[in-house]
Length: 241
Ligand SMILES: O=C[C@H](O)COP(=O)(O)O
Image (cartoon, rainbow, N blue to C red; front, side, top):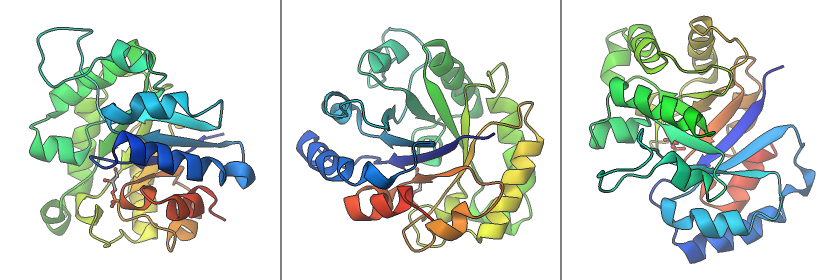
C-alpha cells in the first residue's frame, strides 16, 4: 500500500512570525484530516525551529528545502543533515527545478544530496520534470528517465518520495492535465526497483484541482508551492475528497 504524502513547499516565503501565525491557524483545521495522509511543511531554514517547537505532536511533519552532502565543512550558505535532524526535520526536498535552474545543481550533486539525506535519517523528496521546450520536442520521457538514472544511483528506494513537477506548470497556473500527469508518473514508477515509492504531482496544485489530481490512480500526493502559503487553501488541499 503506497503512502499518501502532501507537502507544502514555502520556498523563500514567510518570516518566523508569519510561519507561526500560519501554523496556529492550520493546526486547528486538521481535526478532519485522515491520519494515513502524511502532511509535510517544507519551510525556510529560518523557520524550522519555531515550526518544530509548535507542532506539539501533531500529524504535520517538518521538512526542509535542501541539504548538503557533507556533515560539516567550508560550504558557505549550505546546511547539513545533522543540522536539520537536530531541529526535528523529517523530510527534505532535493533537486527542485529552481535549485537546478538558478543555483547550478546537477544530477551528480542531486545524487550526493539524496544519499546524504538518507544517511542522516531524512526522507528526501526528489523532484524531476521537464521544461516546456523538452515537452514540445517530445523529450519528456527521455529527460525524466535520464534524471532518474543519474539521481537514484545507490539511493535507498524504501526511504524516498519522488515529485513529478513539469517545470512549465510551476507557479504558472498552467496545470498539467491530470491524466497526463498520471501517465508520466506511471512511467516513472516503471523505472523504480520499489513500486511502493510515493510519487507526487507538483505544479499549480490548488483547491480547485486537488480532487481531480488525487483521483488519479498513480498519483500518491502533491507538492504544493503557492497554495500552501494560505491556511484556507492548504487546508482544502490536505482535506481533498
Ligand atoms: O515545490 C512546489 C512546486 O514548485 C509547485 O509550485 P506551485 O504550486 O506554486 O506551482
